[in-house]
Image (cartoon, rainbow, N blue to C red; front, side, top):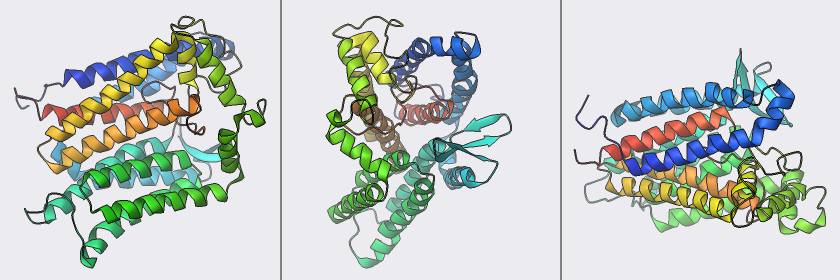
Length: 380
């Protein structure tokens, strides 16, 4: 074990613990009533989250922290291949679980999980390894992927699109467009951070807009979400019900909130209060001050993570940090933005806070890797 094997960036660790512990508190506040009603115990859902989310998350997060980054890099292809295979298992009869008309869960014996959550972190690690390898193949004068000719286009840009196409096809068929959107935007930010030519950035943005228009135009429920977002008052008791209840919840919290555990909107008014709508519960119970602290925590997570990326001594570590920060903060602000009517509803979880084992485990792994990157920059 090297001299800095136990080194910690306490800023990142403190923000992570604040989000995680706060998440447990609000999960208990949100689920104690339903847990009692369904399972006969106010703490059943809490212990389920601890058993199937927190404990395996801590274990895998510690592994990601202690395993040298060069070994993680070597395993990146196997990791993304395994994640793609698990994600494809949702289409296997008897293995994939259909919930709400979507095939997003896999059931293997006593365990069930959402493989697309692990695909996020596996893809980030693989893309970081792939991009850094392309940078290293260039001459020493090239500080990033600043390629222009046709040969470099076929070596860099088209393979990048091919990777996204495979992932996009699997997620589109489930369908899980929200996860696909997070992955695509994260990949774009990583590609941009690699100092690509502006023309590639323009092509990616145009392609992303075209793909979004395609997905929306061929799906009635996605069109309904867009129309509902643009005109919330058109159907307040129907399609606009969730966002209206969310706004009521957050607005009723005032400056300081009603108090943890005292909020009323979670009792049959907010759909999926422990997962999809947990920020609205937090807003009602802690008010503007609590919401502001949570938003600030994600800003700090991004700030400290990007500082770790800037200080990284190799391209792989830098791209890893950029990818993890982009994913976590993007998903957080999509979730919170939907609750305050800035964005359409998506149903994606709030990182470290929403109920659910699969996403929490993947986020613990991401935190472990980010701490692993940052410890290499610390002077012992």
